[in-house]
Structure formats: C-alpha cells, structure tokens
Image (tube, rainbow, N blue to C red; front, top):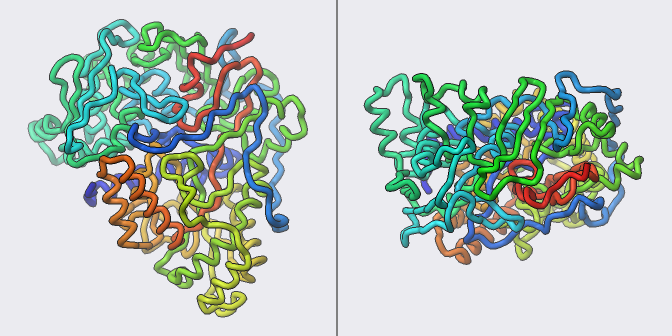
Length: 630
C-alpha cells in the first residue's frame, strides 16, 4: 500500500510515542526497567495477531500453577565483567500513595500510573488499552493459538475477489451493557469518530486503508469548512446497509486489516452518549462518567477514582456471557517496588497486568524466596530489542563491519546473565512462533571468530583503523545495562573501544526521528501492534519507513514487502516475507539483541490463567477458565 508523506509524519509521531518512548527508551528508574521489558498488548502494541490467512501461531500458553523459566540456550562464554545488574532495595511495606484498599472477593490488579485517556478513539498506551478492552469488544478477537475468531461478528468476513471489499455480519441480538441494542451503525460511528481530525486518535492510521480515511483524518479542522469536513467524513469507506451488516471499502488489498478488526481500533461507540447535551464529538466528558462510559465488552466500569483505582463488574449482557470472576479492581500504584511489597502482603494478586511485568530489580528477591519462585511465570513477549547502525555513517556504511558487530554480540549472555533470564536471545526480528518468524533463514548468531574475520575483511584487522564509534542511548538504568554489556562484548571479541553516550530520553527520541540526526550506533526496539509480518518488516525496515532511521535501503527487500502487503494468497505472502527476512538478517542494518518476555507473579488463588502475549488485558483469553479460590 502506498503511504503518503502525511501518513509518514503521523505514523512517526504516534509510533514514537507509544512504542519507543513509552517502553523505557524515554523513561528512567524502575518504571523504565518495567516498561522496557513489557510486551504489549498491545499492539499495533498492543496489538493484534495474524490475519486468519497467516501461517504460524505463538508458543503454547503457560499455566500459572507452576513456575516457568525463560527458555534460552546455555551461555557460550562468561558474561563480560561490566554487566552486573544494579541492585535496588524494595520500598518499605505499606499501601502505595493513592492506592486503593483491596475489595473483598475481587481480582486485585494494579496500573502503574493513571491512564491518560480511556477513549477508544484515542487510546494508545498499555494502561489505556487494558481498560478500554475490558469494556469494549471488536468484531473479532484472537484465541489462545493467535487465530482470528469471531466476537461480535457472526462469522469470518466475506472478502471480495480483489481484496478491496470486506463484509461483516453481526450476531443477532447484540446489546450494550445497559441493554440498548447494538447495531452496525455503532461500528461505523466508532470508525468515523476515530478518524475525526478533532479527535486526533494516535492509532487512526490503522484505518487509513479505508477509502477516504487518511484524507479525512489529515484534514485541518481549522482550515476546512464544516460542510467540507462532512463530505470527507461521508466519503470514508465504511457503511452499514442494515443493522447487522458492515461493509469496509479499501484503497488496496490489505490482508492485515482483518487483524485491525480485533484491536481497540474501530470499536463501536455510542453517539448518543458521546454527544449528550450537544457536546462536540471530541469531548472527553463521557469517558469520565461510568454511567456514560457504556461498552459491549465483558466488563462494566462501575467506579473510577482518579489516581486511586478502577473497579469493574462482569457484564451479564456480553455476547459470550458473564465472566466467572465478577469483580476486578485495579489499584493505581506508580512504583513497582511498592507494588511488589503489596503483592507479598497479599493486597495484589498479579504483577504483570497492563505491561507492568517483573523486572531485574525485584528478580533477586524472587530467587531468594521459595514461595515466590512457585508463583513466578515467564512466557515469550511480543517485541524485540536491537542495536541499530546508521548505514549512512562510517564505519557502518560497510556491510562487513555491521555483520562483524552482530557476530560479536553474545545474545545468550545478554538474555541469561545481564537480564537474569528475563529475556530471550534474538537471532532475527520476530519472536519464536510469531507469524513472520522463520527457522530456515540466515540467522544473526554469536560467532567471535567470524566476527574477527569479517572486521579484518572490512579493512580493520583487530579493530585497527576504525573511526571513533559512539553508542548513543536513552539514559535509563536498563539502557545502561544493555549498553555497558555490549561495550564489553565489542571490546572482548573485536578489540574495539566503544564510547557510551547516554542522552536525556526525550532528546534521544528526537534524535532518532530523523535520518540526519540519527546516531552512529543506537539502541531501540519494536513491540508489535498486531501479529502480522506487515507490522514488523514493512512498518519498521522498508526504506520509506518513518519508524526506524538506519538509512538502509535494499530494493529487493522493499519490493518483496510491498508485494507481500497486498498478496491475498497466504502461502505466497508468507514466502515473500520469508525472503525479505533473510535479506534483512544478511544486510544487518541492525543487530537483533533479545526478545522481550512477559514475566509474572501470580497468586495461587488465581486459577486457570494462561499467559498470552496477544491479549490486550489481563485474562482476556482465559476469561472463562479463570476463577478465584478465596
């Protein structure tokens, strides 16, 4: 799909906000460590899963009834001496400032900070999506095998032969949580409201493939007359011919768009509640009043105390029936060490909801406690960390230099020693068992002998003659950990001295938004928005990408991903992405480092939960298996 410059600018602003700034590239302290290790939800994040035509599925979910360790090869060498993990003493026992007292009989979770918005048309951060998707449901969802399955839809969509018209039928008898009938017009309204330029939703770009979607969203409401804005809105390619039928008109075939219909994008919204009393469509009043914040999902928001808590009750009118856990409470606790103390005291049932996963700072305390070890669970996440090279700058304009640095990166040591098992070694972009992960491509592996030879072949034997190299990163504890370890590895295996350049996180984010300011070598990562290879290869590494600025351009990679993005045959599509993935690994514009994991602590009273990197809120894919024993 061709993307206009306005689309590029929009995606850059949005993705940097959610995927790279939120995830500790722009935060510090313990929050940075937690965010850094989180695997979305998601997304986009979070985000979706493979379209039903996609091959592959995530690893089998891991029950929480027994501890699980992150699977990783045994380290091939001792960890460099400069990689010790900073030790942080947990906060003293006591209730978190602003935190809520636990409600009897509820599932007790926590959010690491108040959600900025819970408007479905504006949500983009994990805390926001956690709340939105408890209350609202889209046409489809993903099962435990990451397959697209109907939720509000009556079956899988009908797709026209040219792939540009998608027709979805709703199940009969759908209602909102207050009993009012839910119709196709509510979905149409949700889409058009999200595209409204006044709403300015961060993820509106996922709907740009709709006819007229980008044109409406990028119109300047201050310079466009109301009549012209209405014409643009009316031209958006989504309609409801009757109460149970939704028709999406696309500008080009887009198999990945089916996954968008399982995300928080394009959710149905009640126009009468949004515009109650003549309020404008972009107002936020309706989201602050639980009586107006009415959804069609598994739970109903019954109480929100700003900075204190959110309380939800099971929705008996949800299409799949009332979930067994009747009450869910999120206490708002900013500090992970305070949350950890609350968990040990029995006031919180889970650490890991809303992306606030266990991190290296509290891992040592878990290792020292036999009971906590039994409650600790690690499963693969949905993101990948990498060390990027600016291929426009020496010495990384030389492919052999890039390959040498990649071969000198001991990924097993990074995952197992530096991160204490809270990461998985990454030999390619996508995590294992995700659609777009391939076992039969060239892998980026640790090979110190090959690394030395590649550097010598590039004209720099034993590192001699290399220009000065700076490794720039957002100045957080986690990034210092990674960068110091990598620095030691490059010295040990290449005899290259790397200068570390920590930069204030916001400034670092600004540097990586433009090719002309992208550092020589830098640390970034990617968390999926939806589990489709298009959200990885095309979005991040195609030369027209606005997400990552390595300066790398490969015509074959560009052409393969462009073909794959619109290919309707699942096997042909997968083969195209496979070829592109092989080129990416060989050309090495980045050295993949490790895959994020989802590391949980879960109390034994929470039974039946299966950790799943594709869910948007805790327990989404275990709703009818979960129960509380006390």
